[in-house]
Length: 337
Ligand code: GA4
Image 1 (tube, rainbow, N blue to C red):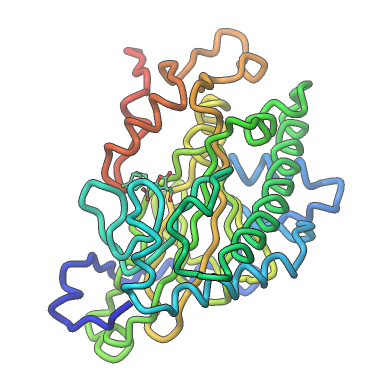
Image 2: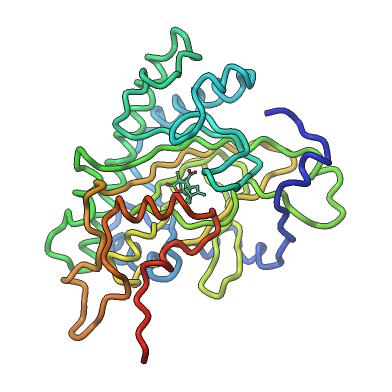
């Protein structure tokens, strides 16, 4: 990414520092779930209700798969712009720089957005020349391992919710029609912000939003920037941890639990000195899947908070929205009482 002049960065949103960002101690208030412990399922459910967000350790994703993909990503993002652009515009899949989605959102970020199960060779990833095969293999290994972890988490979630059908959520990710995505985000450092930050403002890397899918599985390098929004609407910084994964509840899971789980609003602020690299797997259902509260989770006389929709319908509506929009709003049923 080219270094932009002050004038050029003025088109980006800035966020005023908030004191609450220091609310996390080194251990933090973010729930940490050790997947190897018997209490994992209970902690996951609590975390999804309270934050829609948690960190997992003992996740079982081999460090080798992570570091191989990380170094491929570093190589890719350090290519000259004209080479990266050969990976295609991001509509919907490919390389993107600053422009997020199709509706006017921008951020201090460049990225590769890939469809799961895609034949990566058919994308113009020829920029890798001879290394295309290597990139594809490394990506496949990573995605398989992360999806496996995601399914374990979703099964623990079902157990924690006392759902008999253990794979009620995980089967949606395992379906060969699963509409899952993978994203590599590179947030270059913004030296201007580090040197000339008299206003105490931060440049926005990726603006606030919720993820439309079921679950998002995020791993980043050790650079800070990620923040989540709490129930009281305050923002808190998530201390980075390159050995762990961070898990987000998405809009579809909020609906399937009839609002019991919270789809977490989150954002990434640019860093003055260090570049941030994140890899996110968005676990989504097949396009034809009906997204509605699970009957087994509904208490007697409990009514659905949402109109029924398919993932196709929701995705279409989501992709027509701005990043910060409340996408579920269109599908909420407002009771008169
Ligand atoms: C947010 C989660 C994923 O990154 C993503 C994003 C998508 C995009 O970058 O094209 C969207 C955004 C995300 C939701 C609203 C629309 C679509 C940008 C945007 C403004 C790939 C996704 O599935 O939804």
